[in-house]
Each structure stands twice: as C-alpha cells, then as structure tokens.
Length: 395
Image (cartoon, rainbow, N blue to C red; front, side):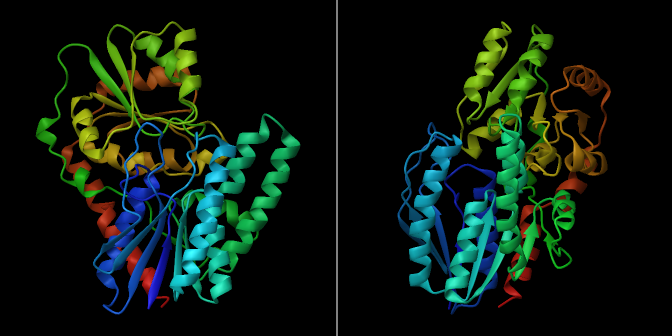
C-alpha cells in the first residue's frame, strides 16, 4: 500500500513548509506498518536563488521514498512562481497516478499544491488530507487590492470557491493557525471536524544551549532571519527603525525574497548605514548567528490576511530565549501575549509604536523556566506525532 505526500518544499530546501514537511513525514514513517510506503513528491531545492543545493531525484529512507521534480528557475515573483508550480503539479500528478495511493496528503501555503492533492484523489477515488498553512484567496486579494480593487475581488471570489470545493471534500483538514477558522466559518464552510496542529519548536532549538547566550559588550545586534517578501513588509519599518537606533545597534538581516530590492532602496533613500544583509544560510550556521544576536526582530505586513497567521519563525525565536521585538497584529499578537514571555509587540508598520516597544525591551524580564514551558508545549516532534496519528486514523 502507498501513501502520497505532496509538498512543494522539502529539505535540503530552506522554508517553513520544508521543515514542517520533514517533521510530519518522519512521524508518519514511524507509525505506518511495514507494508505501507510513504512517497514524498516534491521539487529540487528552489526556495532561494542564492542558496541552491542539489539533491537526488529519487531517495529512499526506510519506508519513505522521496521523488524530486526539476522545475524552472523562478525569481520569487508571482508569475514566475505560477510557472514553476504548474511544472511541478503536472509532473507530480503523473507520478501520483503511477504510485496509486490509498491516501494523499497535501501541505499547502499556496492553493496549487492543495488543488493538486484534491484533483489527484478525485481521479484515483481515494481519500485526501489537507494541511492548510495560509489562506490563498484572502492573501492574493489583499496583495492586489491597492493596485486594482476589481481584480482583487474577482481573484478572491474565484479562489475562495476553489478553496471551498477542496476543503469541503477533504477527509480531513488541519490549520496551522486558529486565526483561519473565522474566515472559513463566515464563508459557509463547516469547520467543526477540522484540527489545529501548529508549527512548533524543532529539536535544534529545543536543545539550544542557553549558556552561550551573551550580550555583546560593544554595539549590540538586532537580528531578522527569514523570508523578505510582501508578507513581511520589512521595507515599511526597517529603514526608519534602523535610522532611529543608528550608533548603538546594528541590524542584521539574514534571508532573501521578492521584496529585498525594495527594502535596500528604501534603506539607501533614508541614508541608513547600520543594516547588514546576509544570504540564506543552513540551520547550523543560523544557530551560530542567533548566538551572537542580542534582540530578535519579527514583522508581518499590515494586511487582513496576515492578521490571521501564526509565523513559524515565532516558535524558534521564542525557544532561543532572547528578547523579541515583534511587529504583529491579530491572532499572532494574541498568541504572543498568552504564550511568549520574551516578546514585546507593536502594530505592523507603526514606527512610533516600534520605538516605544523597543524601549520596553530594556525592562523586559522573563525566566528561562517560562521558555522551557513554551518549548514543552510546542515541541514540533510532539505536535507532529499527534498529527500523524490523526491522519493515519483515516486509513
């Protein structure tokens, strides 16, 4: 018997989706019987053009078989990514038909992988499970709204109906953020059987050596590590914030994305001289960078769709145990207030609130025991263990 798991990103690729996918696949592998094979159908690493690693086309790990599909190089821009997704979807669909699974799992931050999962399952008359990491219809509508309101409404109407069809017919649906529920409830979708298994703290950060966390004696470092795209909106806050702290703090940005050029232009426009850019790095190297930082920075755009999400980066930031300056609103802000003792929040894009929150960090006190409680509650391994059991219960 075969199970197919569609995921556009998978290690050694760097992304929240890839880290989640490998954690879930390992737990599924541990729990399925010997006569079941788990087929991961993914892509060759492609998340960042300046961080490329070649992986085997087919790779076996016990009862896991990984199939990697070559896709065209993309710039991270919308149209470029659509082309890449179509190449993946067509080839993944053909591969899935050959495997002929009894269950298909799709983890999707964008709608394409979810639709691929639903279409493949319909063709093969088998069950499918959707792990929903973002609301595509609302995100795409919010992004286009300022450019063309009519086009934004059309996109939202079309993609919501596709989402509704996909999610209504799924055997099971999981949300990585409880903030998504209200959106689908208002759209008339029955969410009563859906589950909430969020992202979590990976092993590397569960065992983070807190004795190595030391404040720099000279100029202190504020670190942002992650994607630099429309969703993060760094160009709206970083240049002004960096200018305000110039002389006492150095702002280090590790990552890449579609908005990096805009961010750099805004930094140059504001004559900012204390921002350093580093390309995406492996997790091992990133941990070393975390150790040298004094404050961790997090920010999402001030759009309705991003008020529902729960950033995966928040979990590793929280586990590290250093002060967090977070420009978040909506559900993620409430989550921090309830669960994260080492963070101060400000409204996204609001430089005045950002500066006030930054001042509060000086008096922020928290106990390492509180961090350990967070890690215990949101251990990725524990979360994925429960999620794998739930998915396999449908067999």
